[in-house]
Figure 1 (cartoon, rainbow, N blue to C red):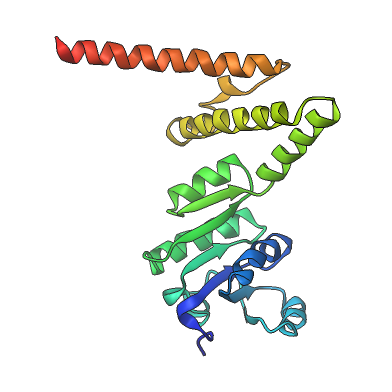
Figure 2: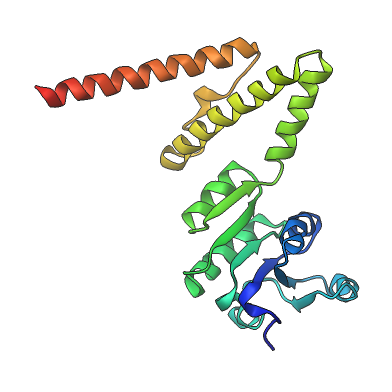
Length: 211
């Protein structure tokens, strides 16, 4: 049987603590969730809340089809097993290449593997909560809210650059961007130096093309 309101359905695989939180803004906006989970007892419990739940691990094409994967607006991989998540991603992208796939990543290496498998979006499961925690640490230490926010955003930018390097050169490619006992000003100085280097490289390239 296909899920109700199929044209507005989001398929969520893995309805544990991560998946449950993910589901709330989606449901609040009026989308219908079709759920695949491998915990039989849990499936019985959440069925009382009106969810349509399919028993399985998310890697069997027949279960994915039954849960509406082919017509889903998006497929969300929220399982807490990184090997299973990668396998699900590979199968889903092969079976349903036109459906957007968003996945929960365990760590940096897993995030890279998921992107290589073709997922459209990944998020490391502890990334945002740890950054928010770090910002609150700075506030507790007496830093102004503006400074705490700035430091968090500076780190996000550095981390994006590091992650881009790792996607090309492997997990250790961005090690030079990892901070040790640095003062906040060091982060800004490092960013400024990198921007100068990029501008200089761009100018050299432009001058070379003009010759």
